[in-house]
Image (cartoon, rainbow, N blue to C red; front, side, top):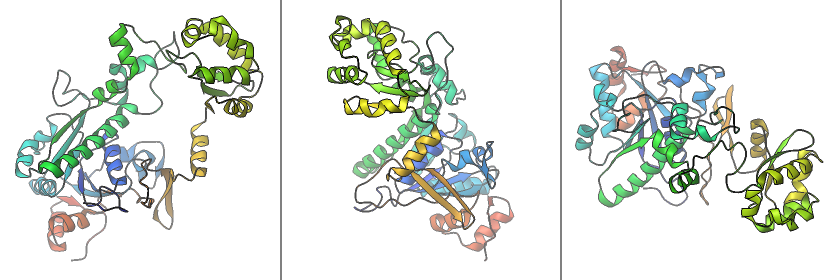
Length: 408
């Protein structure tokens, strides 16, 4: 459908029935990849438009960060006319993405299987807390709930202290990414067989998948992994340290060559000859003694002054940056990871950009997240062929909401 030089999902229509974070993040990925994403909202709008404390105009910064390059259509599906419109839009798109609790779509009049039988090429992606079946399928879930149930929170924080939530909403974001991966796979499969699929993505399942080697350690060795803090269960020289100015840095000295480089950069060449630390196994066995020596050594200089000598010795190293520092670095990197979205001459915001780059494709900056109902008329005209008179009639009965009146 797309050609070299254009974005790969150009021409595909995505109907976004999602709210809050996991679903909107998924559909923003699809929009970044070129899809025509229409966000179908109730007349009161996605509840994430109203999350405090930061706002630009009527919309929260939370909403603005995950809804760029989309269109908004506002439909009252509680009215028969509104529900009929939604069904017609569904039949005229390639993909529907929703994050209702299982059973809710049917209760509001959207029978997934009936709609898919009428439109066999339709791909329907369902994101939920616990999946479309199973003992917890009807329970609501949020990011911290699935971080807790998956074991992720049990790994996060300092040993001997209470568990803490990850500083990013990984429960939501990872589910959104997995859903985007599945949608792209289903689109590729449809090109071969001509039939869509129903995708079932569980936030909890996705968090379990992200446990990585920690889950394998538990399953194979029968251990219960402990809080990780800023350390690694297997590599004692993969952790954070504090410099003499109180600022933190991290090193990841994973190999024997890096271990020797670490000793040289710290001015402790004798450690590489110490039998307690002669191999990865020995360093792990004697990690407490090793950490005491390394922690003392790092206090000799401000953290930033360790970066150059460690890097010169082949040791991967980095300061722990604040979010503003990391964003400033990204702005200077030339990778296009800070984007300006302009609404009008008076309103513009900066957001983190699309991390997926296609060589030979020019990256645009995307479009400002839509106001509620901003594109209602345009979408109904383009997708369903409705004219201003018909749309005006729908407005009159409050089946749809328009941001601005349409001239008939």
